[in-house]
Image (tube, rainbow over all chains, first blue to last red; front, top):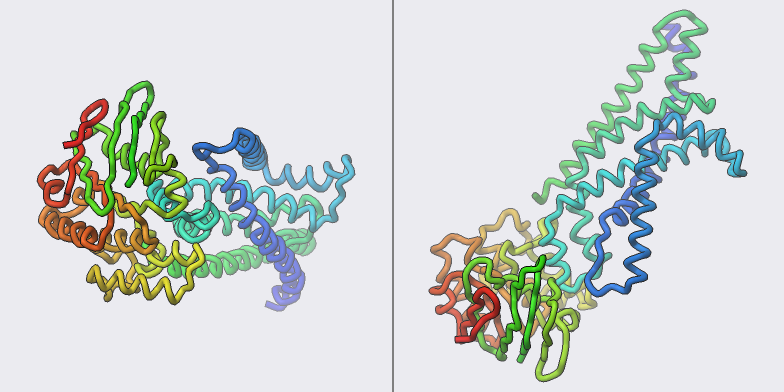
Length: 225
Length: 213
C-alpha cells in the first residue's frame, strides 16, 4: 500500500498528460470533423454556377484524400511524421503541440466519416421540407439536420472517445510522459507489475466516467425519435 | 393564377411529362390524378421547385417566372406525403421555425401558430414532439407549418395515402375548409373519389402528358 502511494504522484502526473491530450483532441477534432463532413456530403444544386460546382468538387476530393490518408495509416506513424518529419520542411512543433496536431487531424478524419454516415441517415424529405420552407443551407443544418445527426452518431462517437483515452498512450513515441509511460518506468525501475495494475485501474476509471457521460448525453437527446 | 406551358420532364431517356400545360386558378382546388408512375408527383415537385423541368415555361399572373423564384417569394407551400415534420422540434417550433428565421418576431410567429393550431384543433399538442402525434395530427401540423408562411398556393402530395382510410373524409373536409379561406390548392392523388370530394377541377396525367377535364 505504501508502495502504491509512493508511485501515485508520478502516475497522476502521467494522467494529467493523458487527460490534456484527450481533452484538446476532442475540442479540436469534433468541430473539425463536422466541417469536413459537410464538405463530404456536398451535392450540386440545380442551376449552380459552374465555377462553384467545380470548386466544391475539388474541395470534396481533397477532403476525401485527407480522410483516406489519416484513416489509412497508423496514428503512431502520423505522430512520428509530425514531430520528426515536418521539421525537415521547416514546420517545427514542440512535443505536446505535435501530439495534439496529429491527434486532432487523425480523429477529425474518423469523426468526419461518422458524421457523414449520420447525415446519410437523415431522410432526404427533411432537406426538401427545409427547402420549401425557404431555409438557407446553414439554417437547415443548424436547426434541422445537425441535431438529428448528433443523436444518430452518439453511440459511434462514444466508441471513438473511449478509444482516444487509450490511443493517447501513443504519445510516448515522441517522448511525452503519459499515464502508461509513467507506469512502465515504475515497473522497470522497481521490477514489479503493480504500477501497471494501477495504470489499468486508472484507465478503467476514466472510461467509466466517459461511459456515464455518454449515457447522460444520449438521454438528453431522448426527447425526440 | 399560375400557368404551366409545355412542361417536359425526361428521366434517363424516358419522357415522364411531355409538353404538359396546366392552369392553376386562384382560390380553386385542382386535383391532379392519374395512374401510378404517370408523373403526378414529378409534376408537383416541379411546381414546388424541388425538381427542375427539362422544358416549358411558367407564368405567374401573366409574368414569366420559375418555380425556384416562386418558392423564394413564398408563393408556394407544400404538404408532403410523409409530412416531413422536424422530429427534433416541438409542434409549435415546427410551425414558427421558418417565419422566425425569416425575420418575424417570435411573439408574432407564435401567436399566428397558436391561432392555426386552434383552427386545426391541435392547441393541446403545441409542446408535443411529432413522434407523439397520430398520422392525422401530423398532417394538420404540416398544413399549419405551410400556412404559417402565408403561401398563395398550397400543394398536397397524396394527402390520404399515409393515413387510415376512414380519415379520408376528414382530410377532404380539412382541404375544403382551407379553400373556404381563399387558398389556391393543388392536390395530387391516385384516389378518384377523394379527388372528386375536394376538387373544382381535375387534371389527369396520363403517360406522356395530360388533359384537363
